[in-house]
Amino acid sequence: MQQVTLQIAQGGAALDRLAADAAVLDADEQARAARFHRDSDRALYRAAHVLLRNALSRQAAPPPAAWRFVRGAHGRPEIDTDVCPDTGGLRFNLTHTPGLVCCALTRNLTVGVDAECLRRVRDARALAERFFAADEAAAVAAAGPPGSAAEALTFQSLWTLKEAYVKAVGRGLSLGLDRFAFRLAGDTPARIQLRSEADAAHPAAHWRCVLLHLDGGRCGIAAAVPAAAGARFRVLLHGGETAPAPVLVAATPGVEVQPPEAVVAIRSAF
Ligand SMILES: CC(C)(COP(=O)(O)OP(=O)(O)OC[C@H]1O[C@@H](n2cnc3c(N)ncnc32)[C@H](O)[C@@H]1OP(=O)(O)O)[C@@H](O)C(=O)NCCC(=O)NCCS
Image 1 (cartoon, rainbow, N blue to C red):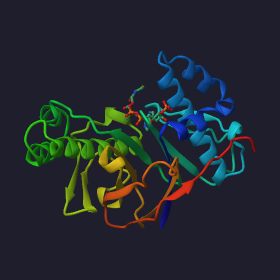
Image 2: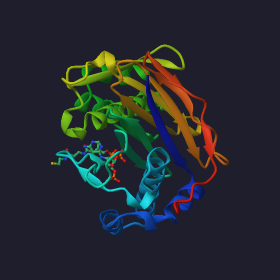
Image 3: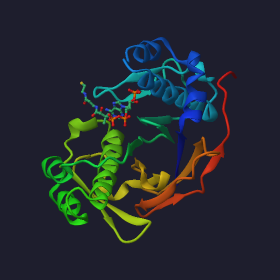
């Protein structure tokens, strides 16, 4: 069974603690951080990349400042194994949204993760009709009246799952969001079903996906991994001393989610 570690940091205090260690970032990350116009975006980027480096160093020998990355054709970052060999096939993906950063770690398998905070999207139906598969657009329309909380939640859940999937496939939004579809069936935790012919390497039935809610559904985190033999998700929570633990709201069959563990503080200086 594939182990997937999700490290989540939420809330100003946890993000500030991480961003304070930005000295571990490499020159490319420092330059990217410096290009943000808003201080809040810069701090979020720094927190995400410090979280990632710390998380990688919990699972392989290089210290946080030693990690180097390369980008694939669609911008997907990976560990630069020329500079960091012998990491045991570690793979990762990263997401940031205001107030929250998350990274997902696996071994020898790709992984995708996405976090979105709930917004009342005024034209959720029109967006779903334009970009989602037809059955997903129908699910958004059936969720509740236009502009309702139920409609927004269904849109957010599908959107978050879809982004996690395209990020795992590595093509980003260039994959085409209507080329695959998620369906959520039943009560919490709902059963996630995926229909896809978009990824020739991994049939839809092999994908293990989870959808977690934080802050009573204000934020959603989805992760996706093509683990045919099943996947066990371990959730490590930074800032858990002030924020309620994430709740599992949906999963594909073949998934286990361990109870969230609080990480009080990790300093990068080792
Ligand atoms: C990847 C993508 C889905 C990100 O979505 P988002 O919701 O805006 O942002 P998130 O916070 O969830 O994720 C951003 C992180 O995803 C990772 N990422 C970037 N490109 C990625 C890709 N193609 N696949 C997987 N992960 C990717 C990066 O770590 C990035 O964070 P960083 O810039 O701080 O390193 C979107 O930007 C996209 O589709 N990019 C691809 C664009 C593309 O195809 N370009 C072609 C260039 S030739």
